[in-house]
Length: 187
Image 1: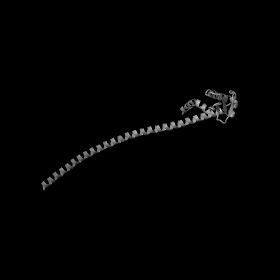
Image 2 (image 1 turned 30 degrees about the vertical axis):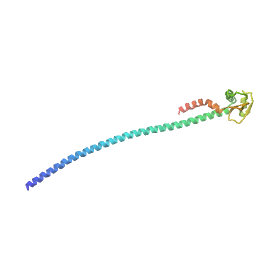
Image 3 (image 1 turned 90 degrees about the vertical axis):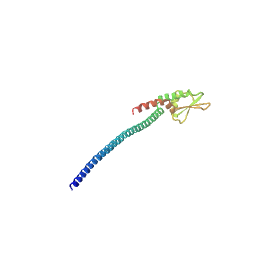
């Protein structure tokens, strides 16, 4: 039995040694797999971080562009409103101006319109403006319900040359736009 026990002991020792060797081999394979998995995880995490940073920058640019577009839209709306307010104020001022200012304004319109008329004419104006008109024009005057300004009507051809507030505003619109741009630049 001693030989049998010795043989069993040797077999047991070899078994234990092989188990230990297998544990070491399997352990190192697991460690290698673990290291590979960890490296793969870190690479994916790095890729995700880089993508997140890029997407964050894209979102930031999109947000900035959106905010700039909103700001410009609002600024343009304000410029348009300011232009309209200035035009309305100018029209109201000229319609209701004191006699000297009204006379100068109407005389300027008359001189500009007269340059375009090639025949004899009569002048059409608002009833409220007759006195101012007669201070610089001695011809025939008729009244109509017009917004403001004058109309020269050819006696032969009935050609009408309109010189009114809108025409005057068109002539000074560049100046109005410069004022609006200056004020809008302060926004």
